[in-house]
Image 1 (cartoon, each protein chain N blue to C red):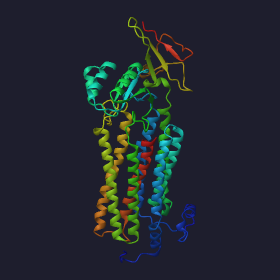
Image 2: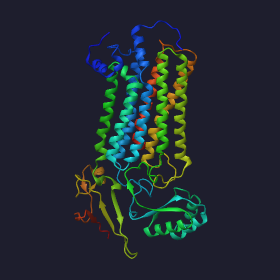
Image 3: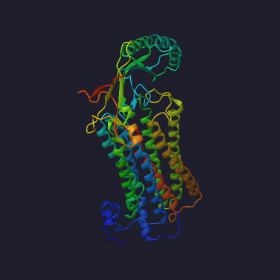
Length: 178
Length: 315
């Protein structure tokens, strides 16, 4: 039910015609299908991390692109809008990527939980012998155990003090507790 | 008014419906510039949260989460332990308690507590393999479906893994679809007022408010279930409830979805005000800017949720 109002300039009227008849219901259908696809995909690939991330990120970006292009009317906007969005998006990606090496690529010795100390079962007469097994990641320095506490106090990295200073071939060292 | 600049030419190549009015685009109003600028800052805001999540999760050590022990437990000495997981509790709690005391050597108080709370999803941990097998055998004998679980560690709660991840992917997938529906009704409201149809516009604005509120309601329900309603295994939380302080994952999850929920709430309130204004006939084919801007905000909130759902729930 259209109500009468002040006459609208013809360019704006054309624009309103274009914008108000965009295929919104079809986009809704596509988004519903994509959501279902994401759900199924995640269930199928939940144990294959790289494929999972790749597929889900692609599906999410397609959905986000549909919402942006049709619902947010980017299709009908002049290019100025990208001057605002693109820098924000670029910064978003780069800020995350720049933090990644600091948090996710630390050598194994820096993280307490990566250093697992298992206690070998021994008869009650003897004290337990802790065996240190390090999860050594490829590319990280495998031989030196670095002492973070000494770095905090003196600013210098020093080797962590222990009596056996070389690793056995299997990568474990026995600490001598006497 | 033809635009000869390159970006608009490529825009035209993309948009078929613009082919019959070449070079025409939506008018640039200060309000629209302001709204898009605000949305750019919102992109940065949510990047701070989601980017932190990605980075923190990537840096999480490989034994931070396990299926038998609370998050961030140092698994010193627990490497060869097993657990018994109750798939169905049966009804006989006294006999469960007997089994727990005799086979699993739990103290009377611990056994009583565990037996009383025994339900589908209970877990007895820190058992040797023999104890676990014996306990599960005895429990099966009294009608409890019990499984022996060896220790498994992950660097982050795995989706679909009931022993480390408490999130309901099914419910949230439905919720994602609901929010997308509210986005559709929002754009249909804008489309209606662009055609001068005030009644349709009000209808769709009201529908957006209702559907958005349903989304919020389901979020609140999920929060309730996580924080108060259910008991989870130790692999999810040391206290049995999933609250922001039980693990890094919990903290990240509640921060991200909480801030998103706060944004949705603000959107719903704004849309309610605009809906009331629309009922009073404030908007017309020549004046509908508030609807457009509220729509932009609402679509952005939907977009963030699409990304959040993918990254937090599915990956």
